[in-house]
Length: 395
Image 1 (cartoon, rainbow, N blue to C red):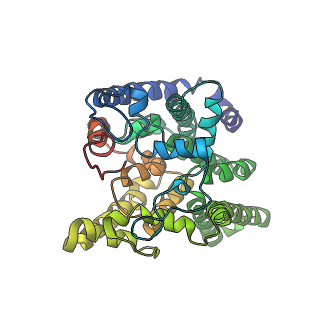
Image 2 (cartoon, rainbow, N blue to C red; image 1 turned 90 degrees about the vertical axis):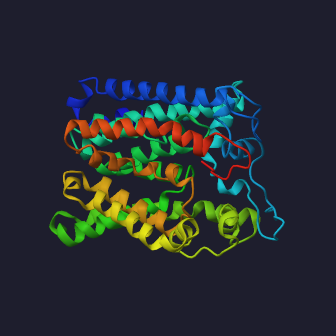
Image 3 (cartoon, rainbow, N blue to C red; image 1 turned 45 degrees about the horizontal axis):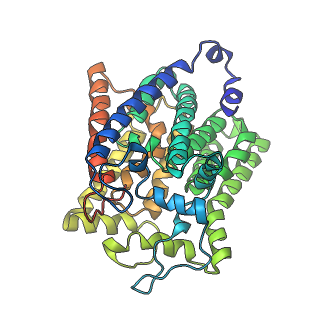
């Protein structure tokens, strides 16, 4: 319903069976990822979640998928668990409710958890392919096919069919970005709350809207009528509110003002011990942990890649909404995220940047990039998903 509504503004697109290409790309991508996952499932040794050689559904619901199962079946704890070190331990509050509750709803018709979780992710990924394709058409016409192929066949593309919330979140994010691009503001009032309770993203979206407000105020003030200014301000406040909503819910239920932060910090304690969350310090701390004295060079390199990608001449032909979202999300990650093996999965919301990479020339260079993405899928599965002994490479 959302897809058809958002495409009515362009009758030309609607009459060309535009949906065939994204669905075809999606189907091919799922065949590729399924083949890789199936191959690794066949050689998986016993793990905390599965016996040796699990079927593909069990293999697809390991790691954090078990936390979503706990939420679906038991909800959230009113009392935070305390680890052996006296601090808050890992618990379900780190996982937002929309995905597990929808999977729980599918279980009511008789599906087991594994089937419900994977079906929800696969279905959401197909819908994401449709909405992302339309978004790419709006951001950079002519690049949409290759851009979508880059996303659906990227190194972390197996996530689109695992028992994680990524597919659903990306669908909601793509819908919100498309609504923003088409100035369908009414959709943002609906999508932003659901998106923000699926995975963290409300604060980054609010920042993106704020950046857009500033660019229009500074350079295009004459074409920025007061009514639209107030609408953007209101939506920015709405997105900010929902960006903090889960923290407030966690506080209200547990009675602890720091419950959510303490929960999130428990996941990085195995790396760097217990530390307070100070914005924009996790990356220097994390890179120093990984690379010791070389960490400043790595930090400069990460920043340089981001700047070259989003500010280079090839980005000029891309709609500003996609670029501003990418900048805002990177700022958000820089502020709160500790770099570890899950970082690759956390980069998926940068999918609008694929239309920038799609400008790469000549043709063989684009083919090389796409081929590299496919070739790296089994590498990601091996290092981040397949479980080997005491495995710290959390996907």
